[in-house]
Image (cartoon, rainbow, N blue to C red; front, top):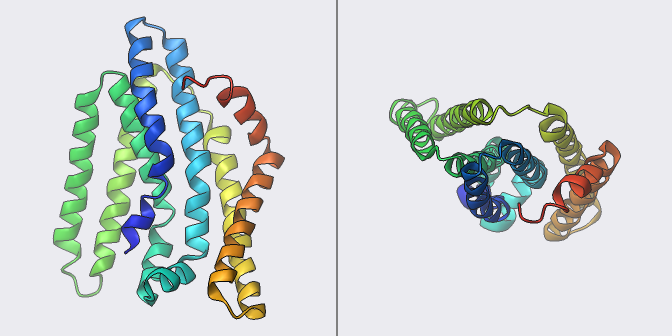
Length: 236
């Protein structure tokens, strides 16, 4: 029940991954590393800005989402733990595409195998423990996703000699998403007390979250970065 919700952000990053692979391959053939670094930076930036609000909203509204979609209380508890990692998985998907575009398909495959091995080992050893059960899978999911992310990110930075812009790529979007999480949750708590419809409360809370994220991006200057870096380079 939870996993289909986790893969919603892939709707946005999959087209980016498809487009960036031939773009990077072409630049690699011409040994144009300046363009390669620029396109990788934009791909990471677009991915984090696009997927973090989904993680924030799903974390904040996990329980009402679980009840509305499946009428199951347990779904909300698991979704609340895993939602933010949808952003990690989406970023892994983008970085995998970057590695393929740089001719590092063997590295990408190796990292996927390592991640799958970590997850499989966690399922085998942890899920059987009475005190963990399904949470053993979640632990394996966390560690495998983080391991793959770290390996891919380090490899790309070394291969392309990429300078990491921590503030623009990660810090500002993360802060905006945390504010989105807080206000979405507060909005739902208030709305559910003044309306009899959980669906209406949930819809309005999602809208509050989206508006909060948009305003936060504007205040932190991310909108200007999107205009300057993304819109002119439509080929990426």
